Amino acid sequence: MPGSTNPPPQTTVTDHVSDNAMASHPPWWQSIVAYQIYPRSFADSNGDGIGDIDGIRAHLDHLVWLGVDAIWLSPVYRSPMADFGYDISDHCDVDPLFGTLDDAKALIDEAHELGLRVIVDFVPNHTSDAHDWFRAARSSPDHPMRDWYIWRPPGPDGGPPNNWVASWGDTPAWTLDEASGEYYLHCFLSAQPDLNWANPEVVAAMHDVLRFWLDLGVDGFRADVVHLIGKDPALPDDDPDLLPIPHVALHHDPATHPLLADIRALLDAYPGDRMMVGEIYLLDTSLVAEYYGNGDELHLCFNFPPLYAPWDAGSWRRQIERTEAELGPRGAWPTWVLSNHDNPRHRTRYGGSEAIARAAAVLLLGLRGTPFLYAGEEIGMIDAEVPSEAVVDPGGRDGCRAPIPWTSDADHGWRGATPWLPFAPATEVTDVATQRDDPSSILHLYRRLIAARRASPALRSGSLSLLDVGARPAPGDTGTGAAAHHESVVAWRRVAGDDERVVMVNFSDRPQHVDGIDGTVEVATDASLEQRSFDGVVPPDGALVVRPART
Ligand code: GLC
Image (cartoon, rainbow, N blue to C red):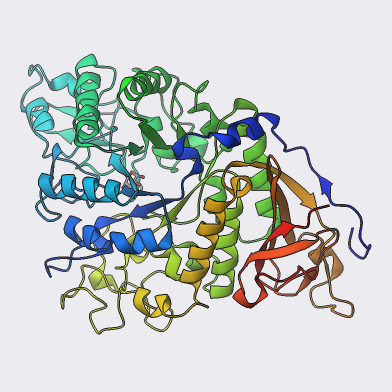
């Protein structure tokens, strides 16, 4: 209702009564801020240009200072690195590039001493073709381990057995094994053959992998493309109209659910409070919701539709509504993620402006659900420009994997080495040390947001109600037209008991006046607004967390 004055904010239908009860004692994975580390790009301890475990250990103080509660490590397992660690040749050892198993144990213990939970990647769908299991399986159709992977004779035309497309490169998800004349399935690279989870020996072996890391002390797992593990043995063709979408984004088979329930039972029976967050690479939140089961499958699921949403108020309002509508009634706890090692960083996707990156930080940390930060977003990193001769990833994801610049020195703290990928453009990126010295930096904004979240039960785990705050431009501002302004601010209220916050994000480049919100600005994209009375204006490309005035 642009132009009106002081109507009471209207709530939409997204309250979940049970959340208030849950808010007092949520399980740890619901109240954390998680931080993803891509080990190759995080910090190098030995000057080989590739980040490693000891590099992470040396920078845990940064994470404690920032205030995050948990780290998720992308794979550090033994690997030929065809997919930079997502092609595992030994699940129970660390690749020498990253260090040793003792280093991993030391990292887990040190993180725990500092109050940080540790989540490690678990890659259940496939192994490396250099894994002993695959070598054995490939050695002969009669080998007892042949059925650990998925083999099929050629299709009727002598080509691949079905029409599934592998990720990257628009190629079939099958490779012919010349020796046996059979094809093996690989939803990713041919160097990443899919395991056959219909074989109980595979299930048992992968459960043993989980136990190995649980015994080492990890608190949880991030399960890579875990919706892929259950497969209809008929391997039916994908809808020809949807080709060449990679099969991973289409796969949705009921056989996955009992496999996840078994994993959940394993985790729940384990001492300590262990969890699994699954990467469900399906672009429909209603499908993602199914992988929570009835509270007996994954503890958390990544939900990527918001990650792919453009930076505009209408899209984000719909994403929030959709997430609440699909997950809320199931009692499934949402996750929110803007960037990771597979996609252009959100600051890059949203056009490069630091102002928008700041507003996105308020959005991410103000929503109901577990936020996952991707290392570097706290300093507003954008993607590196990677010249063709420096490209190393077959999936085209090098840009978002640029190394973290720790200092303003010429080597940015990388031990004098040239890192495995170029740094993001120097003019666009300010290093961690410089930003720590600058209280007005985006790094400090992240720190204040995380602290505010930690201190407020409402922000951490309270209910969420979208508000209509009647956003409108200042009088006389005809900049982008009244219609455009109507959906320029997304605002919501978070409540837990008598704790309450209002979050407002202005997706436009004009100041927006809003109605009916009184209180103190607790966190703002512009720090100079903080700890003042809210004056009814959300700054351009800005966002605020307001502690409402007590009535
Ligand atoms: C997931 C990972 C990605 C990897 C792929 C295959 O999507 O996030 O990095 O390449 O699975 O393991």
